[in-house]
Image (tube, rainbow, N blue to C red; front, side, top):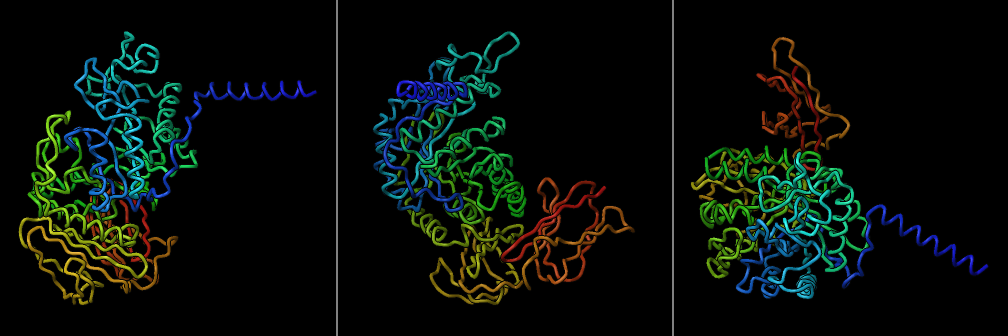
Length: 540
């Protein structure tokens, strides 16, 4: 009887193993270290990108370890490491994104033990570690090329094709379930083997959403770890796939660059904010940057793009405070302008170039880290053509931020509820009485706070009762918008489906007419201090 029972247990175990193999699920390695309990929620993250090839003269993990205290002092709580895997040599240009082994550490950066030491030291300082994950491609000398040719996209003649425009890498085929499973296995490997805390997923808009759903479901199944997942992509479906953060391409290229380089209206920022948060939950965020390895390598430093230290700080305040997660590229905090072109091996950051920016960036991050309203509060924008201005409100805590994005003095008319009130000036460290206007020097920013905010809105918005939209029968392309009963002094934004702001108006009990609308779908957003509702209407 005992023999039969042991036989039954052995048979069951073998069957279970076969099931796991058929699903392509590998056994996870043993857990190294203790899972980090200090991983921040997405809303609270401050991300710092490390490009090890130019970070220090040693260009390795130890060079990063040696500056962890400096990174921590800046107020960072998430370190993101660029790829540290062995790089291919066949048809290659020494790109860190041309990978020939997803399970190994490249000797140029150190050893697995060195990586573990970096993670341990970051954790000891209260910082999580996110690693770069390259999902779409491999090098041409990766073992999969010969062992699993069917894992790659091929042309009509059966030749493996390159990924996108990158001739140094081969394109993986996401219709192949075995490849997908192995890629997910490799991600899980680093969670256990190096005790890392998340992934920045390269070119995340390329793989099909069902792949990311599969991968993220598997990663979230590692219940011992809280993982932060950042999609280097801008499609809204990345939110629904389960990513915590997406990348602020829209904000950078469609707002900041036109504002600074072409003198476009700062209201573009409102448009980007609307578009980047389509399909996002209350806890998901956009990671916004002034530079990264791609931009710095090809276009130069923030000092070049944003007109020096003052212009850089004016833009940084917006990325840090306006419903986003600040994303800092190494060296920005010291005003580094040393050219660091691809593949990032020809130069090293000058850590002494302009240390005067360090305390100002640190102060901005400190204000953010100590304000629940900034990180999680409700956003209302008052931005005009030149000044990005907004409030972030959470309960009775309110933060009013203004940033002059012009290299010239500007006067800003304060909105009702802020005008003629007393607030605390975070930069001057003093209580101030605000009037109706505020003068801002070129690229000057201001941050005012209060813990006794009282909304000017009468009541809160009923999330079930939306605005009343009625066509104007006497005029094509015209509608009347009426506030729900009982609501006054609520801010209304009307956007087209592309995110362009059509109208922004403080509403009272009287209806508002919008005319000259083209055929299409429009979005109405009504906002008060503690709630917001949106609805759509169509012009046919």
